[in-house]
Image (cartoon, rainbow, N blue to C red; front, top):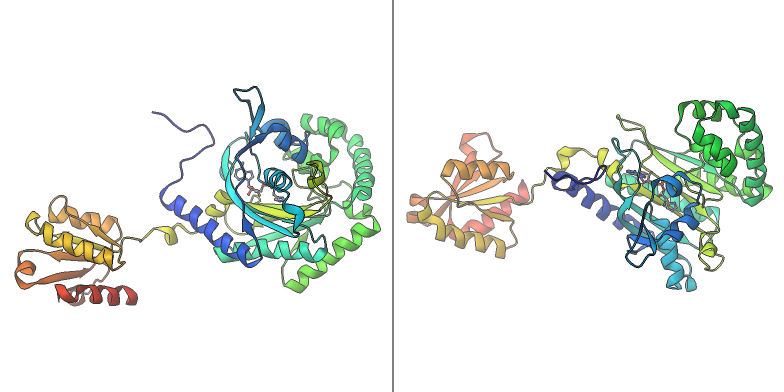
Amino acid sequence: MFRPPRGMKDLYGIDFRKYDYIVRTAQKVAEKYGYEMISAPIIEHTEVFQRAIGDNTDIASKEMYTFLDKGGDSITLRPEGTAGVIRAIVTNSLTQNLPVRLMYYGEMFRYDRPQKGRYRQFRQLGVEYLGDKSPYTDSITIATASEILNAIGIFDFEILVNSLGDDETREAYIKAIVKYFSRHKNRLSQDSQIRLQKNPLRILDSKDRGDIEICSMAPRIMDYFSKDAGNYFDKVCELLEKYGVKYEVDPFLVRGLDYYSHTAFEFKPTKGEYKDSIGGGGRYDKLLSQFNGPDVSGIGFAFGIERLMLLLDNQKFKGNIRRVAVTPVTDKENDIAFELFKTLHACDIAAEFLHVGNLSKKMKVADRLNCEITLLIGENERANGTVTVKFMNVADEARKTKEVNINEIVGFIKYALERS
Ligand code: HAM
């Protein structure tokens, strides 16, 4: 038996319907906020991600699917969407008309340890907003993300926000945490001891229990904000309140990617078993210039689609597209039933033509397909020029079936479906 590679899943049935619904709903909300779609390649030159995400992050150092292609170039399956979209914006000189607002969705790849909600191939939907650097844009972007969740039908989540400040802030803060973590060096995990040398901020998003305990007493970035960074963050919080967006300040939220400055945020579920982050994002000041683009700041976020899917009720996605089953009782009625099936389709009614097997098998299939109505044509109906309409979900025997003239059946079905 062939199986997909570890951490990768086939997406079909209810799951595909959920995926499709999430993407379409998010797209509608994003359009309202002025976003247009972009689809960048799924693979990029490895350097695109190394530059953007930062060499010493877990993603770039451990989790990337990197290969030499047949021409000997190092290429990487995208672990996230932002780097490729920013590269595309610079390649295509899209910053000539600011602001640029782009939405994307699709497959991402991280060689992580698979578990519930964590896969090696997963899907994200995200947006990037370039230009208009201001707390207004930041609060609008967080509100956009929150509205996307609400439109999808997800209400039980919290928004954690923090600021990574400007260069001046981070320089002072990194000095302070290096001093702090150096004091606890021997108790840090192996990975975090390396982080202490190479990228100390990353210790703050370590998943190691011992590290988490040490981190809880670490200095907080807000105590090192420059005046500008502090004012900027205060204004973002004030605007979120005006927007009616509920949030919590998490002083240790640093996100797992190196490109952030100022506002950073994350979304976490508050109900149910699943507790990990369902999405996150933040502002980045230098990404465009890192790709030799203009000095334009941006902000964006991405949701993990599989994680959103975990929060949706399966019941609502049972799928009920084929609603009417046209069912000849025996083979003798096949042709007349086929004519009726064609007529229903021409009138935009979703129909199934169930002509294989005996009647009981056909009825079972109608049930399995969740058909609400079965149209039966047998010897009597053929003789009378009628169809027997059977309402599959009606228990009351008196209302369960009705014989209708075949010439009136389309109008009858349309009326019945509208009312159901
Ligand atoms: P991220 O936090 O690395 O941010 O990923 C965003 C979301 O993708 C996570 O919150 C999570 O829901 C989902 N995700 C991440 N890894 C996995 C996985 N292995 N399996 C399933 N879902 C996963 C970014 O990727 C940034 N590019 C967001 C951004 C956009 N920042 C600015 N613009």
